[in-house]
Image (tube, rainbow, N blue to C red; front, top):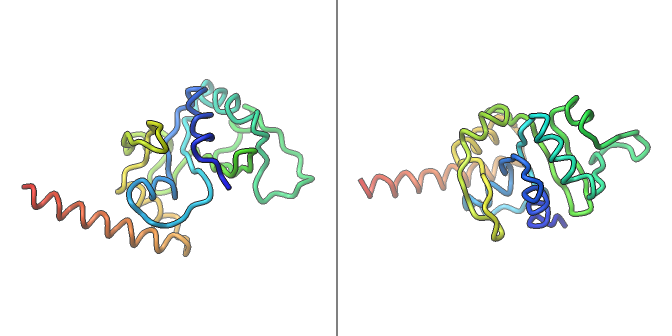
Length: 165
C-alpha cells in the first residue's frame, strides 16, 4: 500500500518542485475512486531533478513493470535523459511525469495548479479542469468513471457559482 503522506513529506523535505496529478488529485477534487499510486508532475530544471533524486534515492526506486534483471541506475543523468517514469519504492508506487498529456510540461501544469491540503500537508494540485483534460487525453478505459465524476463535480461547481451571481 502506498504511503502517500510519507512520500509527500519526503518530496517536500527536499523542496522538490512538483504538482500532484492523477488519482490523488481526483480524490482531492471529490472523486470517490480508489488510487494506489502517487502521480506527480515535476520541474525538469537541473536543481530540481537533483532534489528529486536526493529525496527518492533512499527509498530504493525501481522501474515498475520492468524485468528485475534490467540494469537501471536512479540518478540525475537517468532522469534527465528520460521524461516520465513509474517507480516502486519502499513507500509504495510513485509516477513522476515531466509532461502531462493534454496539459504540458511542468510550467504548463503549474499554471493550472491550486494550493490544497492533503493529509495535513500543503501541496499544489492540478485544477479540476486541467485534470479532466489530462484524463481525457490519456484515453484509458480505467479513467472513464473518474472523468464522469470529475465532469459531474464541475457541473455542480458551475451551478453553485451561478446561484451566487
